[in-house]
Length: 393
Image (tube, rainbow, N blue to C red; front, side, top):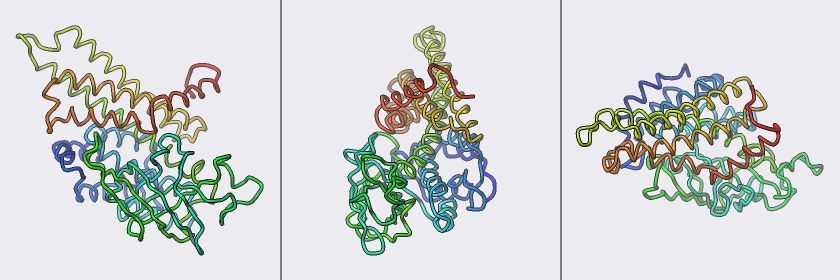
């Protein structure tokens, strides 16, 4: 795999088709192939595994471009990167060799299967069972809202072992028990064509309509021991955490691009739209809306850039600053898209309105990982740890 494609040119070409993808509820196969061929599905993977070795900032800028056009495009990069990053960090050498080049090339499309009926933002409440079976495991449970679950070839499934001494653990002294009092969690790769896997497409979701959202049921699905990623006890605290951190990074940048795109739509619309012979842009109230939107979008971009630079330097503060960036960017996307929607009025309500589509997508971005209060608590913990305001340098 070479360098990344010209993402700006790709995104510009995709803009005219994005509303049709939203109505159809899927991305065309040739678009997925083009993204794979252009290095987007393995953007920050090492070249040894078929990746483009992009920096965190380069990956972020690509997601901003895609997010400003179609959240499903950015979503495909996100979920593929989440699973790949977890395998790169916690997979065995054999797993990395077997799976990462296929993910980077788009030969295998991935889904991250974590959310459940009672385990959304609180993944500690997982009920999916991972049971030792012969020389491997049997997986039983139901996962909700799996991005690109309708076309995924393999799922990274997070579940719970039935006891604290499941085969493959790291011993009795706590080395394999970072999940604490919740018991051991496990992460496994489960192919979508295994007996017992049922994929149920989500019909007409509020947003992210082209992202192939699905509910996936696993009914005593048997997988070999080689599909276990890290020992039991590390599934949530290590494997899932690595995937979620990567997802926050790409979602944050995608939200920044969405906010910036909406601001562009708002500026163009208010500059040419007249009411009573007066341009909307000539009203002070409208200019104030645009000013607030500019500050929100610019602030999100600055925080995303700061977090990306920390990630590229492998700073221990990168994880916390990525949480801050994701929160700010999702908030900016929600507020700017809402203001843009309101400025466009009824014109934003039609099926071919990019403004309406981005407004719906922004709402979904804001509730990823649960309510805003979840992120606020995490950021509050950061403030307490630092003893006051400020960001890591």
